[in-house]
Length: 269
Image (cartoon, rainbow, N blue to C red; front, top):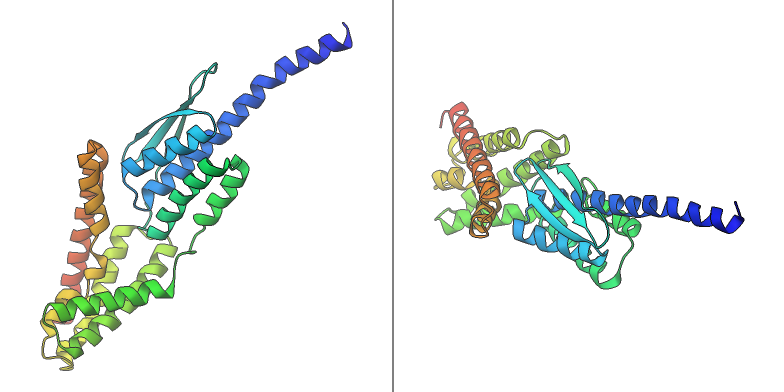
């Protein structure tokens, strides 16, 4: 057999493997990207648009199915058999910074034709654990809660107590989330801690409106984003995801309510 024929046969044997590996890399990247984007608080519509944008930039057509516990993506292009990629969705805390950066990454890939290897490195940087645990978030959430206390008629003493209880609760939440404690347990314990701290407004006569402080000290735990996303997914006809997010939000609300009640009960309020 001549050398040219051997070279041609070798090329024919290795080319499909290279194509398959390229699609596998794209599929694994897209499933990881989708799971992270959905978990940090994006709606199904945004997830679909971003995934199709990234897949299109690499020359693939994508069909995505999102379910409460897992997702699947089918990639295909002209002349190749479609391939299915699946991924388990692990619960994550809402993170608007991660949400925005992941969306920006999809546009960067689309506009600048970023290679998959480079896109994977940027993705790993964005989803790096504890990168978004910022002191500013805790301070701003505490100020917002104190402002709500004032909005509902609380005095300066009540605002101070709510600020302190929220700040401590936010740090406690960050520690528990870093330890991968279940979200429901985190909400229950943080609500109980904040309620017990706010009980000082009554026990030590710090405020003339202690009931306002007790009612607003757990507002930072209200799962507003899951409720909003559930409504958005419902409108977009992603009924299973909408029902799942609504149920999760209701369970978290029940958990923080139970924590608030137990905290006040332990302080005999």
